Length: 319
Image 1: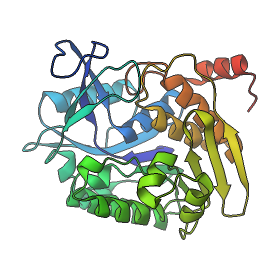
Image 2: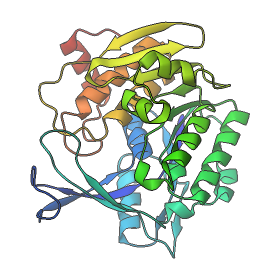
Image 3: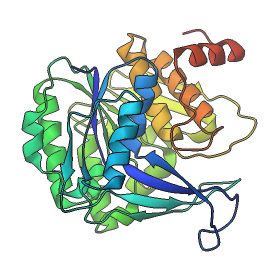
């Protein structure tokens, strides 16, 4: 029994160790594991919460590596199946000193893309308090989208709180129009929607945080929208009409932006699991995101409770 459950595709990442060297010329790499939804599960576990991850990996060394690594982080693997025919998704990732790194994915037709909806009926949702969903998994195949929707239906039936991060990956979708239509529809099933202002430009044609929030608050279940506005923090609006800004934290040097959005999500989720109010949850989201951008890797900067407390003391924050 876990407090948090999520579904996604784990990605074995070969990350360049050579700053600002293109992947054409890079020759030194380190192997790490990523995946947006998995990042959230890892970070939540690090903060003391029990998590389960639903996925499918190949029956090969990459699949072995994924399961071994997930277990090492304390994330539940009982809903990760092995596929004898299809491989585990993987990618190449640049190392940059400014901006977002380029990544090149090798995941079309992967094992996770063949995760069928039948597995969802076997998932025990008793005791699950929250579920984190992302727009990435339904993008990888029609089968994955069907499986994703099946899980959504079960979560809604069980009245489990759902967070949804659009996490746009245009290259994975068959068309831009399909991506926009599907992401905006799926967001309507969530209790809390977590878009970014740049995603708002693509999905809605606006980077106005309040207009973005107003659009997603039309969802039948949506109670709050938290719009990420980069280093400035986040804008929050609720179905009850509350609206406020939560400032971000100043960072001396941004090393790697990958995983910051997932860090924000896990910060919000874990705070809510601990009974904190929404404003405090967003403060934690900003804090975890700020810690993550100061480290390499997809989730290396996510804190445990002791590290989070130390960061709060340094910043003069009280939960």
